[in-house]
Image 1 (cartoon, rainbow, N blue to C red):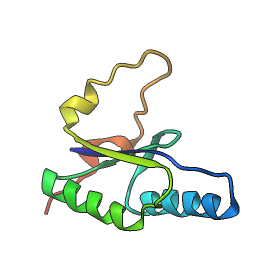
Image 2: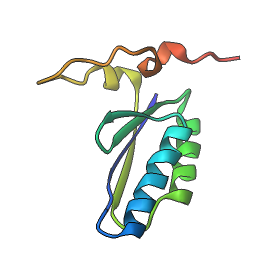
Image 3: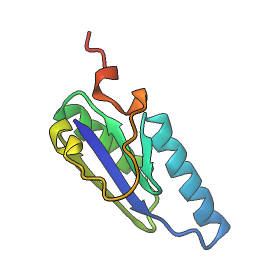
Image 4: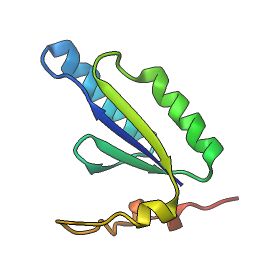
Length: 101
C-alpha cells in the first residue's frame, strides 16, 4: 500500500516558510519520498499502518494551507499513467524494499 500526501502550504512569511520546511522534513523522516513538488508517497505494509502514519502526520501538520492524504494499493499506484516524463524506478520507490519479519 501507499500513503500519498499532497499539500499546498503558504510561504509568505518567515513563520510560514519555517512551518513548510518542518512539515516537509518530518515527511522525509517518516520515510516519504517526493513524487512531485508537494506530493510525497510512502510505502506501507497494510491499511492499519497507513492509518497510524496518517494520524501521526496530523499531529505535526501546520494549521495554515491545505494538506490531503489518500491510501492507495500498489495495483492502483502501478496504474498511474505517465503523460510526460519517465517513471521513477529507484529502489526506494518500490514495494519490494519492505521486509516483513
